[in-house]
Length: 200
Image 1 (cartoon, rainbow, N blue to C red):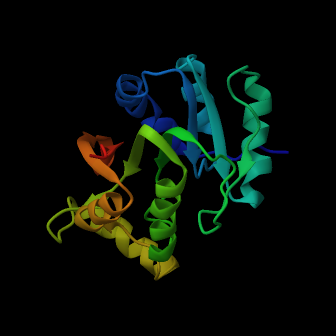
Image 2: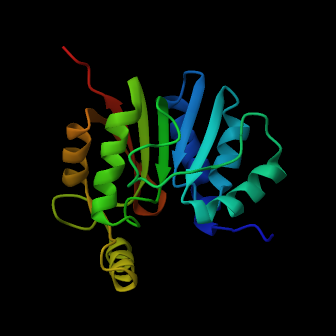
């Protein structure tokens, strides 16, 4: 089959790697939620050889993702697993690291809530989560291009759209997570780093 392709994934993969290689330091499995085309997974798994990079996405996207994985032939990049964030049971019961890129503004808000509820159920103690994408701050867009992008998203699907940082922070805290870093990224995106809250 023809492999799916995302130009934005090609454009941002190196900038993302420069951050996550300083965050995902421990050996183990990094779970990518919403792997899209699979391009990020192939690039990150090749560079972060101390990690098993496990891709997940909706079932209908898995064949395209697997076409990238099969061509990459990396020992630390197994075939993709189907994951719907709305489902109670995710493919893993213990997630030590989670990465997701350009997903929260595509999901409906209820799905964003499901995503964080799923993290609360499945994250291991001392887990780390990295979330990449655009966010609004103080009720405002960070750029004209993000405003236009948000309008395009909502014209396509009124339930999608750029999320507000404060609302994401509330969901994270409810899930037992704290946003510990907020990196500015190219093209008016951000990379949020979340750590599990220490229990008393």
